[in-house]
Image 1 (spheres, rainbow, N blue to C red):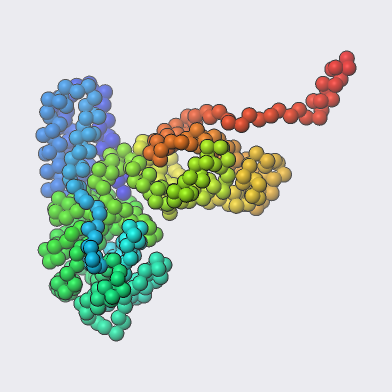
Image 2 (cartoon, rainbow, N blue to C red):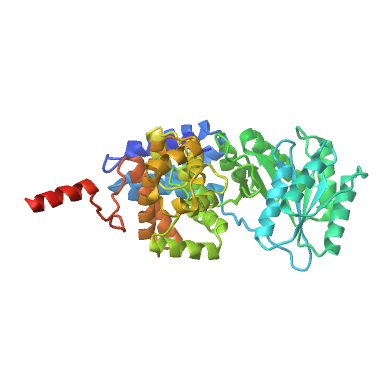
Length: 479
C-alpha cells in the first residue's frame, strides 16, 4: 500500500544525507517535499498541515542543526510524529465479565463488512472466546447465506431469522440466544448501503439503542481514500464509534485514509484486513505502521505471525532437527507454508527491514510461480529423497523432473540451495525467534544483493575414487 510514499520519503531523506551539518533552510526545503508526498498519498489537508508544522518545529531545533547525521535524526522525528498521528491505540478488545461482549459492526455495502465479521470471530476464537454471529443484514440478497457459510468454515454458530424483516428484533433475539448458550461474544452484522442515507443511519442507531453494544466498529474500505474519512465522520455523529477496521490493506491504494482517520474523527483504527482469508486480520499498531511507511519493515509483526502459526511442540521438534542438521525437504515446505500464512513471498519480504527498499531499488520481480514449482519438485520425490537430497543422482533427477514438469537443472539447483539453507539453519539453532528474524534479514539482503554468504558444510564429503582411478594407482605401484 505505501510503496509510493516510501519511495518519496526515501528521496526526501537522501537529500540530507552527506551534507554534514544542515541549515534551517535545508530543513524547510525537505519539509516541502514531505508535504507534497503526503498530499499525493491522499492524506487529509488539515492533517498534512499539522504534521509538517510539528515536524518542522522539532527539526529546526539546535539539536538537528548541529548533528553530523541529519538524515537519521530526521527519520526519527518523522517516525515519532507518524506514531503520534495514528496513535495512541489499544488494539485489544475489552471483554465483558459475566456476559457476552456485544460488538456491532457497521459500514457501507461493499466495504467487506460480512467477511470482516467472520475474521473478527476467528480472532476471538484465537483469544479463547466462544463467539456467535448474528445475521442482521436483511437488505442485501444472500447476505445471510454468506454469513452462514463463513460460520460453517469456522464452526461458529450463526443466529438467523429468515422470516423477520426487522433487524432490531433479530439482533435483540440473537443476543438473548447467546446468553442462553453461555457464549462469550456476539458479533452483529448490520446492513449497509451504497451511500449514507437517513434510513441506514436510523436503522443502525436503533440497533445500537436496543442491544447496547459494548463496542461499535466501523468497517471502512481503504481504497475509498478520503471518502472513508467522511464516512467515518457521519457514522460517528450517530453512533459514537469505539474504533475503525480498515479493510483491503493489501491493495495498491495510496493509504491516505489510514493516516487521516484518527486525527479527523478522533477514533482509533483497531484492526486492518490484510488479505481475503479469514485469518488475515491484524491488530493495528501505530509504531509498526510508521516503520512500514518509512521502509523500516515490520519484523515484530512477522515474528508474531510466525509464532501464531507454529505450535510450541512443532517448534521444539523443528529445533531438534535443525540442531542436528536433519531438516528434510518436507519439513522445509511445511514450515514455509505456515510462516507465510497465505501471504505472498513479496509481501512477507517487505516486512523484513531493508529488503523492501532493496526490492524497489533493484526492481526485483518475485516470481510466485517459482514457489509452486519448488513444491511440485519436492512432492515428486520419494520419502528417502526428501530426507536426504544427497542421494539424488542423474537418474533420480530425470524421474523427479518428469514428475514435476521441471527441468533436471531445476531439481539440481533446488537440492543445492536446500542443503546450503539447512547448514545456515543449523547455525541458527538455539537463537531466539527475534534473533533468527534479524539473521534472516541480513541473509536475505546479502542474497538479493548478489553477495550470498559462504556457508561451511557441516558434513564433510568423503572422496571415493572411481574404479579407473584405482587401476591407475595399481599400475603406478607395479612400475
